[in-house]
Image 1: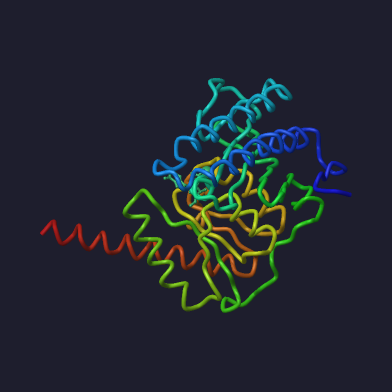
Image 2: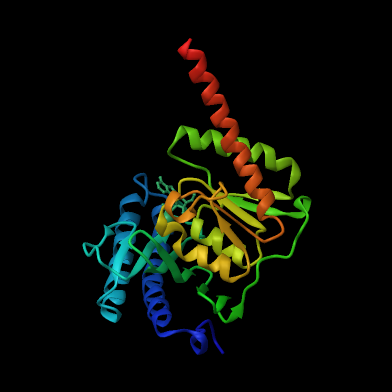
Length: 291
Ligand code: 2AM
Ligand code: CA
């Protein structure tokens, strides 16, 4: 078999997503070839990449809408579609890892999650696809049916020792507080583990935890489209996905800790330490300035 169409096990809705992702992926891959040529120009490929990103979102929107006209959308570039009473919606990042794409680094992906509303303020991710066109790796998962890379079943890694563990993360770019939390967690973790990677695509980071390449991954301040598909992928591969706090919701807060069942707890502890340390310092500073 030439490739990567796991159609025997795909449900109809997932088949729709896979076809849409492959179509958008072919176009992005052509644009990626062009980007590599634009690196040498003084202006750089910035505008060109923004256009490629928008076109990919448009392709995905058209394909998904045609197949399931009743589904709502949450998309990185265009936001939420207007319907408020949706039962099902697509959660779409047309190009996760934009900075890599812009620099000609072949580590970026299309991410599509399928979300189902379960109550007035609650929902559940039912399925997800993360597709890296440059490597032709298609990760997919469906609730209760497992996670797959192309047609191979995925399991999270079995490593139990922190000193053998490889973790991935994202460096926060926006908030000062998150940067301080991140640095503290990183400093706590580095001496205990085999390595920490920062490859620049949250969706692929989660897919790679599902594939057992990393023991875990944490990042603060993500958006829903960065993680919808990846969360179900890790869970269906037997891993844990939580917020840093015991009762937090990663999907709502954007703060996520994912890992294999053996090391997820230790990674979460390190993330909590970072958050508490910064909170403590801030409280001290506030008390100091009060009097
Ligand atoms: P993106 O490529 O779709 O923007 C890596 O830490 C994650 O953060 C990626 O999933 C990336 O998604 C996102 N990201 C990187 N730079 C960003 C920025 N300036 N604003 C918002 N999200 C960003
Ligand atoms: Ca993204």
